[in-house]
Amino acid sequence: MPSRNTVVRSMHDVGAAAWFGGTLMGAVALNGATAKAKSSSEGLHLASVGWWRWFPVELAAIALHGIGGIGLILSNKERLKNQEESRTNTAVKSAVTFTAIGTSVASGILGKIIDNNSDQGAEGVTEPKPDAPEGLQTAQRVQKVLQWVTPALTMVIIILGAQQGEQQRPIKGLFETTAKMFRRGNFT
Image 1: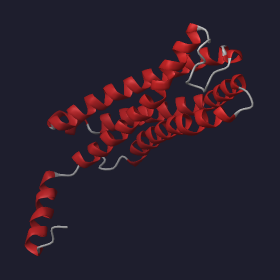
Image 2: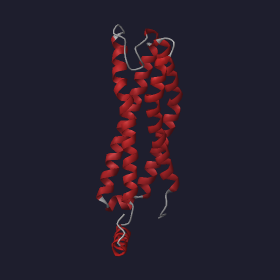
Image 3: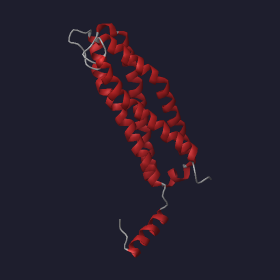
Image 4: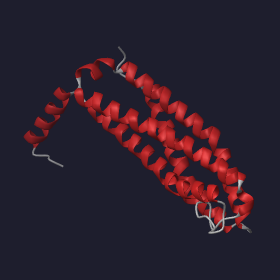
């Protein structure tokens, strides 16, 4: 069994990083910048255009992350079989990943609803006008939450991936390194 999984680990990590970074940039910059449009209906439409341009990249990032994740699971079957904390991490990370996929899909559906009603205008991409149709108001209110949930979930995926990397350190090597540090008096 190979000791390195650089390709699948890179796919896993780059996919998660793109997914996280793109959704965070969209919530902060794209949605914020479109509030400066000449009209509120133009702002809603421009935000939708930006998000739809991101959509294929987000799908590719999710797929890349998923393929890399499956590759890591397959290449670490023995460790997962013998190391309970690795199994727990993998289960939690899988659940968070599927939840983030769900919030990404839901955001896309809500974005389409917002775009279809862009002629109604709004206070902001996720801030409805008081007289907007109820469907638009609901879509904007839910999107206001989801625009932050997806980056938060993908950040958790990245953190759990880092934890998995730490779990791959051999215990024997960890003890040897710690013992050397104590013998040298180097505790920093």
